[in-house]
Length: 135
Image (cartoon, rainbow, N blue to C red; front, side, top):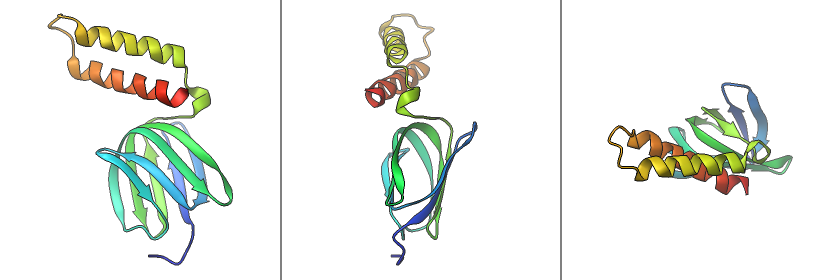
């Protein structure tokens, strides 16, 4: 384990750089479950999934984002998180997400053989995550 108590973390989305800070803890949704990253973490490259990203440190305000996909690299207390999509609580439109969840549920329960089930399941997961995060 590294002697440092902080690591350099950079969060980047296609739209902009979200943060470039020193942090003591990062929690990210991996493809198969959440990953906790602390200073001294072993080298890692991983795919990210859908869920809440939490970033904390003694010299920064805690950051909470709803993220959907991307990749993360950890090497020598340098963490780069490339996010496909990231939203803050203020950017979440809960009523719109509730409507999206209703549409996805209707598609999944319909008897229409043309429904793209995987797409509807992904829509339902995204809408449910937005509702939970936005409240």
